[in-house]
Image (cartoon, rainbow, N blue to C red; front, top):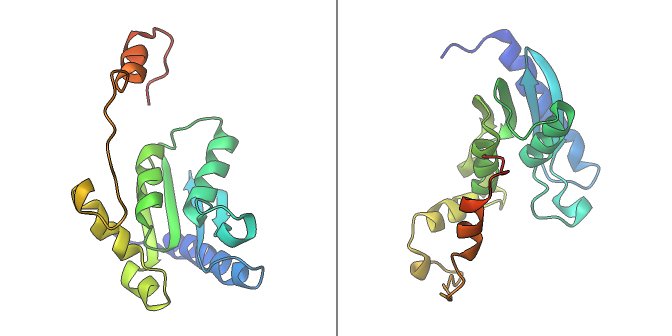
Amino acid sequence: MQINQNHHLFMAKAIELAVSNISQGGGPFGAVIVKDNEIIAEGSNQVTNHNDPTAHAEVQAIRQACEKLSTFELNGCTLYTSCEPCPMCLGAIYWARIDAVYYGANRKDAAKINFDDDLIYQEIELLPSARKLPFITIPTNDSLLPFETWEKYTKKTHY
Protein backbone atom coordinates (compact mmCIF):
# COMPACT_ATOMS: atom_id res chain seq x y z
CA MET A 1 0.00 0.00 0.00
CA GLN A 2 1.40 3.36 -1.00
CA ILE A 3 1.59 5.99 1.73
CA ASN A 4 0.66 9.42 0.43
CA GLN A 5 1.33 12.86 1.89
CA ASN A 6 -2.01 13.02 3.70
CA HIS A 7 -1.08 9.90 5.66
CA HIS A 8 1.99 11.75 6.93
CA LEU A 9 -0.11 14.77 7.93
CA PHE A 10 -2.60 12.63 9.84
CA MET A 11 0.21 10.70 11.54
CA ALA A 12 1.90 13.98 12.46
CA LYS A 13 -1.34 15.08 14.15
CA ALA A 14 -1.55 11.83 16.14
CA ILE A 15 2.06 12.28 17.27
CA GLU A 16 1.43 15.93 18.12
CA LEU A 17 -1.51 14.89 20.33
CA ALA A 18 0.68 12.29 22.06
CA VAL A 19 3.49 14.74 22.80
CA SER A 20 1.22 17.56 24.01
CA ASN A 21 -0.72 15.14 26.20
CA ILE A 22 2.36 14.39 28.31
CA SER A 23 2.51 17.92 29.76
CA GLN A 24 -1.20 17.64 30.59
CA GLY A 25 -0.62 14.58 32.77
CA GLY A 26 -1.65 11.96 30.20
CA GLY A 27 0.26 9.14 28.58
CA PRO A 28 2.39 9.46 25.42
CA PHE A 29 -0.24 8.25 22.96
CA GLY A 30 -2.41 10.07 20.43
CA ALA A 31 -4.85 9.05 17.70
CA VAL A 32 -7.04 10.57 15.02
CA ILE A 33 -9.84 9.10 12.95
CA VAL A 34 -10.24 10.24 9.37
CA LYS A 35 -13.26 9.98 7.08
CA ASP A 36 -13.34 11.40 3.56
CA ASN A 37 -9.85 12.85 4.04
CA GLU A 38 -10.92 14.89 7.08
CA ILE A 39 -10.13 14.38 10.76
CA ILE A 40 -13.45 13.67 12.48
CA ALA A 41 -12.14 12.63 15.90
CA GLU A 42 -9.08 12.96 18.08
CA GLY A 43 -7.99 11.11 21.17
CA SER A 44 -5.13 11.13 23.61
CA ASN A 45 -4.36 8.77 26.47
CA GLN A 46 -6.41 9.84 29.49
CA VAL A 47 -5.89 6.80 31.72
CA THR A 48 -4.32 8.70 34.60
CA ASN A 49 -6.31 11.90 34.12
CA HIS A 50 -9.66 10.07 34.23
CA ASN A 51 -8.66 7.12 36.43
CA ASP A 52 -9.94 4.93 33.62
CA PRO A 53 -7.76 2.08 32.32
CA THR A 54 -9.83 2.00 29.11
CA ALA A 55 -9.21 5.67 28.25
CA HIS A 56 -6.53 4.93 25.65
CA ALA A 57 -6.08 7.34 22.74
CA GLU A 58 -7.62 4.98 20.19
CA VAL A 59 -10.66 4.25 22.37
CA GLN A 60 -11.14 7.96 23.07
CA ALA A 61 -11.05 8.71 19.34
CA ILE A 62 -13.43 5.84 18.55
CA ARG A 63 -15.91 7.08 21.15
CA GLN A 64 -15.74 10.60 19.76
CA ALA A 65 -16.14 9.45 16.13
CA CYS A 66 -19.09 7.21 16.96
CA GLU A 67 -20.81 10.04 18.81
CA LYS A 68 -20.17 12.48 15.97
CA LEU A 69 -21.45 10.05 13.32
CA SER A 70 -24.26 8.65 15.52
CA THR A 71 -23.21 5.07 14.82
CA PHE A 72 -21.27 2.22 16.41
CA GLU A 73 -19.67 1.21 13.10
CA LEU A 74 -16.93 3.33 11.58
CA ASN A 75 -16.89 1.86 8.07
CA GLY A 76 -15.13 4.24 5.71
CA CYS A 77 -12.87 5.54 8.47
CA THR A 78 -9.13 5.23 8.98
CA LEU A 79 -7.30 5.38 12.29
CA TYR A 80 -3.88 6.99 12.67
CA THR A 81 -2.20 6.33 16.00
CA SER A 82 1.17 7.27 17.41
CA CYS A 83 1.86 3.68 18.50
CA GLU A 84 0.78 0.17 17.54
CA PRO A 85 -2.51 -0.44 19.37
CA CYS A 86 -2.60 -2.57 22.50
CA PRO A 87 -4.83 -5.67 22.52
CA MET A 88 -7.75 -3.76 24.08
CA CYS A 89 -7.59 -1.06 21.43
CA LEU A 90 -7.12 -3.65 18.71
CA GLY A 91 -10.37 -5.28 19.82
CA ALA A 92 -12.16 -1.92 19.85
CA ILE A 93 -10.84 -1.15 16.35
CA TYR A 94 -12.18 -4.43 15.01
CA TRP A 95 -15.54 -3.97 16.77
CA ALA A 96 -15.79 -0.44 15.30
CA ARG A 97 -15.09 -1.88 11.82
CA ILE A 98 -12.49 0.72 10.95
CA ASP A 99 -11.11 0.24 7.42
CA ALA A 100 -7.38 0.63 8.10
CA VAL A 101 -4.90 1.50 10.84
CA TYR A 102 -1.63 3.37 10.44
CA TYR A 103 0.74 3.57 13.39
CA GLY A 104 4.10 5.14 14.23
CA ALA A 105 6.02 3.37 17.00
CA ASN A 106 5.50 -0.34 17.65
CA ARG A 107 4.81 -2.45 20.77
CA LYS A 108 8.54 -3.14 21.28
CA ASP A 109 9.20 0.62 21.36
CA ALA A 110 6.43 1.01 23.96
CA ALA A 111 7.89 -1.81 26.07
CA LYS A 112 11.20 0.07 26.25
CA ILE A 113 9.44 2.83 28.23
CA ASN A 114 7.49 0.36 30.42
CA PHE A 115 4.26 0.08 28.43
CA ASP A 116 4.41 -3.68 28.03
CA ASP A 117 1.47 -4.45 25.73
CA ASP A 118 3.43 -7.41 24.43
CA LEU A 119 2.76 -9.27 27.69
CA ILE A 120 -0.99 -9.03 27.04
CA TYR A 121 -0.54 -10.16 23.43
CA GLN A 122 1.29 -13.23 24.77
CA GLU A 123 -1.37 -13.93 27.40
CA ILE A 124 -4.17 -13.87 24.80
CA GLU A 125 -2.55 -16.80 22.99
CA LEU A 126 -2.64 -18.99 26.13
CA LEU A 127 -5.50 -21.16 27.31
CA PRO A 128 -7.37 -19.39 30.11
CA SER A 129 -6.06 -21.93 32.64
CA ALA A 130 -2.43 -21.12 31.67
CA ARG A 131 -2.63 -17.32 32.05
CA LYS A 132 -0.89 -15.41 34.84
CA LEU A 133 -4.23 -13.90 35.88
CA PRO A 134 -6.67 -16.65 36.94
CA PHE A 135 -9.57 -17.14 34.52
CA ILE A 136 -12.01 -19.62 36.03
CA THR A 137 -15.31 -20.64 34.53
CA ILE A 138 -18.27 -21.14 36.85
CA PRO A 139 -20.84 -23.16 34.92
CA THR A 140 -24.40 -22.81 36.17
CA ASN A 141 -27.78 -23.92 34.93
CA ASP A 142 -28.36 -20.34 33.74
CA SER A 143 -24.96 -19.69 32.12
CA LEU A 144 -26.47 -19.66 28.64
CA LEU A 145 -29.69 -17.85 29.58
CA PRO A 146 -28.51 -14.43 28.31
CA PHE A 147 -27.64 -15.96 24.92
CA GLU A 148 -30.87 -17.92 24.72
CA THR A 149 -32.82 -14.76 25.53
CA TRP A 150 -30.87 -12.79 22.90
CA GLU A 151 -31.47 -15.44 20.29
CA LYS A 152 -35.24 -15.23 20.83
CA TYR A 153 -35.40 -11.43 21.04
CA THR A 154 -36.87 -10.05 17.82
CA LYS A 155 -35.91 -6.36 18.18
CA LYS A 156 -32.15 -6.82 18.52
CA THR A 157 -29.59 -4.74 16.65
CA HIS A 158 -26.87 -7.01 15.32
CA TYR A 159 -23.29 -5.90 15.70
